[in-house]
Length: 78
Image (spheres, rainbow, N blue to C red):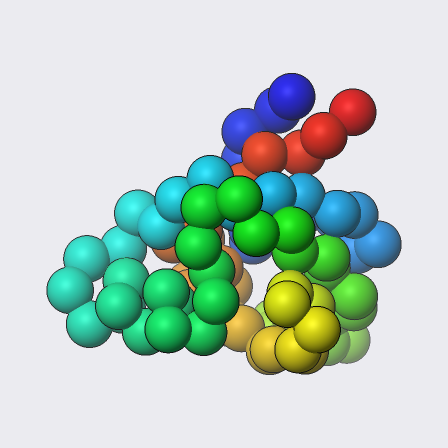
């Protein structure tokens, strides 16, 4: 397994959330959106200039900016 941040997850890859490194309101918001440890997340696509990206987790598609995604540690299986 390789640990990285969600912002560096390649399009089409599936990873598992390890934790959120943000603090305060940002960390709370990301947890409320479903970015909890053990949750699988897929990077579906990115905007033409690379930011934001579209992710899918828990059956929901979410768009996050790179700064937000850089606060989420994930584990890439395989």
